[in-house]
Amino acid sequence: MEERIIDIMDPYELNNYLASRSYVNGFSYSYGDLALCKKVCECVDKYEKYLHVMRWLNHAKSLSSRQGASIKGDLPPAEKTSQYVITKDMSLDQVILDTLSEQKEISSLSFASENGLDHQKLVGAIKSLLALPTEYIKAEQKQISKWELTNEGKSFVANGSYEFLLYSAVTKDGILQKDLMKMPNAKIGFSKAMTLGWLAMDKKHANGPTVFRKVDGAIDVVKAVLVDIENRQNVEEKKIQDLKKRKLITPIVTKFYSLTKGSEFKTIIERPEADLTADMLQDASWKKKSFKDYNFEAKGAPVTSGYLHPLLKVRTEFRRIFLDMGFSEMPTNRFVENGFWNFDALFQPQQHPARDAHDTFFISDPEMTKESKLPSDYLERVKTIHESGGYGSTGYNYDWKIAEAQKNILRTHTTAVSARMLYALAQQKEFKPVKMFSIDRVFRNETLDATHLAEFHQIEGLVADRNLTLGHLIGTLYAFFKKLGLEKLKFKPAYNPYTEPSMEIFSYHPGLKKWVEIGNSGMFRPEMLLPMGIPKDVNVIAWGLSLERPTMIKYGINNIRELIGPKVNLNMVQENPICRLNKI
Image (tube, rainbow, N blue to C red; front, side, top):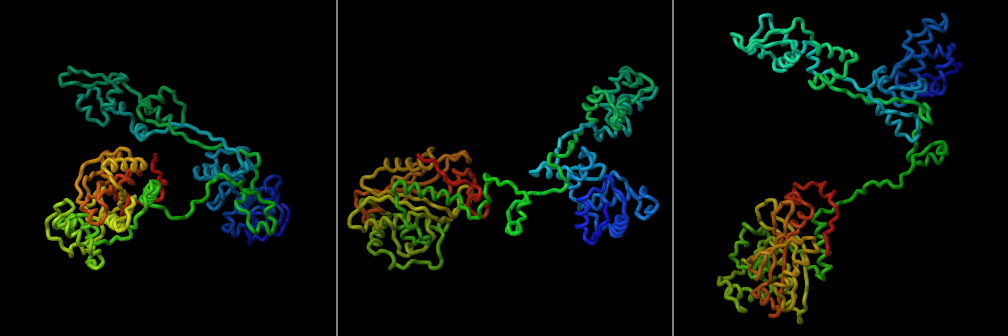
């Protein structure tokens, strides 16, 4: 090696210097090398993670005894020339390349064993090299199979086979079968010993069934074969299969790589750059670098954004369907309503159970609506229809109280909104047919279960026109629900204070495997419409349904508490697809 002043205080510089020169073929010492070697040995810990320095140092040590007496003893004792120090800080992929520069082929299994490496970590380094765009190495996967003794097989080697132990327990005078069978694994051992012809049994012996030796000096063949397998000796295939059936041995397959130089082999790894930086452009270093190929078909990084809850997705689809059918949307910005619009205007008596605290949430502040905010003329007509009837109705015949109508509540249905809109419609000089809908939140003091919550969304639609019938209502419901992809419908007669006739709507839920109520419908009663001022020949058909239950059917959710509330899985919100209800 040529003499050169090296700054050994900079291990990186020394390592690069040694990496660029051959210090194997035709290597001989100079006094500069000797001085350098001494200095490196004085602070060898500093250089342990630098591969080329450590290889040079080990090779220098191995040659110290062959280069003349003048330097003999000046260096530390030589180490094996076939190996070099591999520390935990060294890059295994670099170790592989440097070894291949000197050897034609490497077995990953042998290399790991010789150098005390974890074979799996070495395989990881091999795969890292194979993943590079440059073919540094070629790797052929191979495997070797060998038989290993199971725990039971190892016990046979240590103590003997079951049949031999049983044979050894039989004395010349024989032994009662019942005593012999008390030994561990006696049933298996007895069967094998009898098959081998080692033992015989006298069932008519005076003392009872007695076992005798049939041969003298039995040889424990099974143990001998297991010892041969343990010592990696060749064993007949038939004996191997017999031991395998007895689960005394098990096959072990070890996979490894055979490594050779690739078409573009070199010892210095040049990893392609992923990005073209401003510094590369300024110093023109990009001309000497290689770059990763751009994958123009790769998906972009997910955009950070909010996600629509499934309820909002289905709500949007419901709204679009209503608008497609020519409906206009009603304002639903009143969560707090008074008893008059929520109950009384709908011809619902004040003693009705739905108006109890068990079913309705009452507001404590403000507790009451001022009487001046209720339409006085209409209020009187509603009072009259409740107390004594009218328009062909006998009413409910009770003392109607204004205080009950003034109580503030959380609205129990969006029909309160429909009542306000119909009253406004009745105040117009000339009646015009309308189709209206609303979708918003309502509140009921209900017991929670898989299909009920105290807070849910109600969808409501109504059509007001002259001479409408129940047939128009059923036809409209079929047309509406078909656009939602719900064709399995059932209608059941029901009672509502403000509709007559009334029907409950059911749809089949495949997840729950039963018919689930999804809404209510009917024709508004004359006792509700006529006090408003709606013409006598005008009928109003209406229906209301929950938003949650169709959403559960659409997304296959069996428990409403998994859709809304504290138990909701946020991943469900992010991963659910866009709602596309099947349409006609």
